[in-house]
Amino acid sequence: MMNTVVGWHVEMEFHEDDQHTRAVALVRLPDGTEVRAHGAASRHSVDSNQPRVGEEIAGARALNELAMQLLTKAHGEIDSVSGRTSHPINV
Image (cartoon, rainbow, N blue to C red; front, side, top):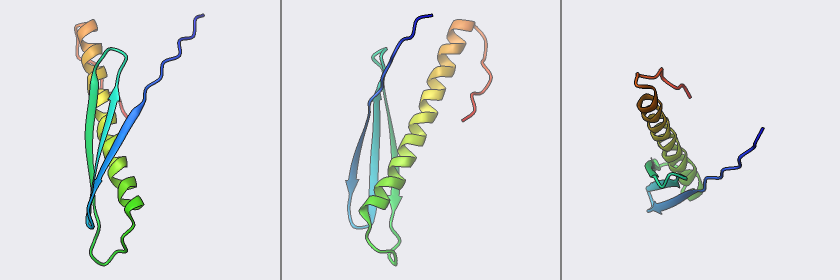
């Protein structure tokens, strides 16, 4: 049995101001495809300014969207090869 090691590197970028954090997640797949997703977080005015928390929330939302896009891509590839509609892949 042959083992193949494949690695993906996900890039995260954040843009912040005093109240908002925006995140962009990007993964480049071995087939040359780039999948990009966005996430956002807002700080309530009574909360203390904790940029790391905003990054964690916005980053998690971007990664969740990235995961859903990858599932959609996988479904399309399954359907293309099999000639039928695949069952949903649950997360």
